[in-house]
Length: 252
Image 1 (tube, rainbow, N blue to C red):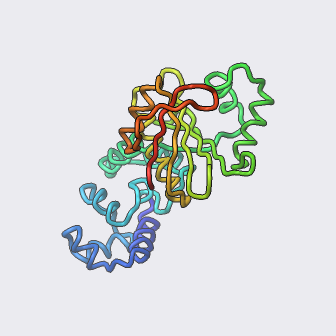
Image 2 (cartoon, rainbow, N blue to C red):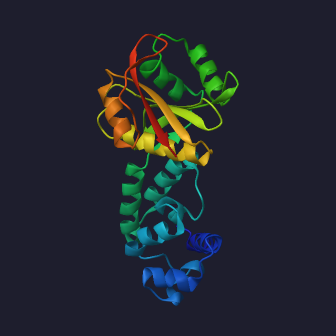
Image 3 (cartoon, rainbow, N blue to C red):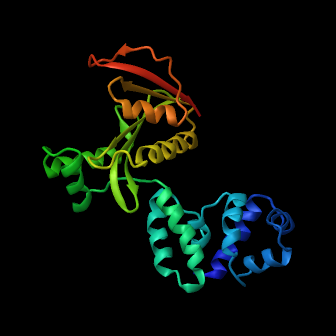
């Protein structure tokens, strides 16, 4: 792990947050000299201070150990690199990173490579030819469906794609989230993690309301929406396909 790079990153984030070294030190109940030592590359934060420091600065453990900001597409690769690079001196930090990595739901775009195409053909659209799947992935990555924002993600947990998640814009302030977990991947917390990450993305994109139609016979989805704070009047409507649905809403 590059201590000098990590130090420069910590200083940059602290400055961005408009914290002084003294304020960071007081918050963590350590000396200013220790904070200065970190920022000049003289050492890494002790494992017991990493989580409080990350919370204070608004960064992840993975970002701390990488010495840079990471988006969703970079997170998984860098986490694996940092875990592999850990030595005996950083074993405690490795444990923190593994815990964060396992808990964090990574959303990434599909690519038209053999691995993703094969996965989708097996788990998502088994009757669709390879060329059609490749074209579909291209359409997904255009981020547009009939003139409105649309984005499709792979849900990745512990390095494995466990389902799909889509975001669809109804208006400039209203969006829907669609989650589909692959066979054998339900009941393991993947849906909750994916929904919570999707809600963060929707908020970051400036949407104000998430609107969902959920079939009354989809008890798992109803439970998920209640769990992450959606509201409903429990009134049963008929959707365009004639299915009984309830409407869920959540303000961001």
